[in-house]
Image (cartoon, rainbow, N blue to C red):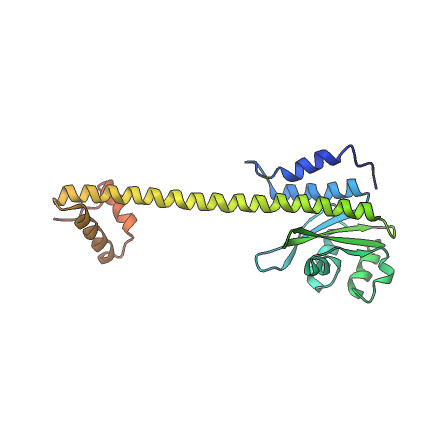
Length: 237
């Protein structure tokens, strides 16, 4: 491994800082892959993340040499990253020449690309597994136990960052939906007041008139309410 002390603290801060306004997920994933290479001293790194259906997708790689290999895993449903994701535990292959039985197609493809070893670490937070980090090297047995432990720690902090960002995005959506609902309710209440005054009826009766007009004209209540407030809809007495 490389000297960890210089870049490790900064890397952990960068991987955890995902709740900022200008956060870019693609940039974050590319940074993660590159930092794994720098800190672990491996040749390349690739990242597979699961979509909403649980299918893995290649989302980042430290260099262009790794991308086709990651895509090969996904397209052929064979490789350490897929096994790692399915088992939710690391997959260690210090020598690809001896992995023919496990992944015959992938092993051949990886060796042809110049790799001799591969390590896959789950992107996992407790029981939630969102993907796999794959580390490749042209040397056999390129990661020792300490290196593998660090890889798991890096994958863990990146997973937390990704999940926090997803939660934040969902919260923003929920908050936006709630605000829209509140704005809609205010508009409808305004329209009820305008109708009640114009038709000289109770507020409850005004809402009945509003709803009946919307239904008979095949329009949404909110649209009719907006028209009443801005005086583009006129419901006769």
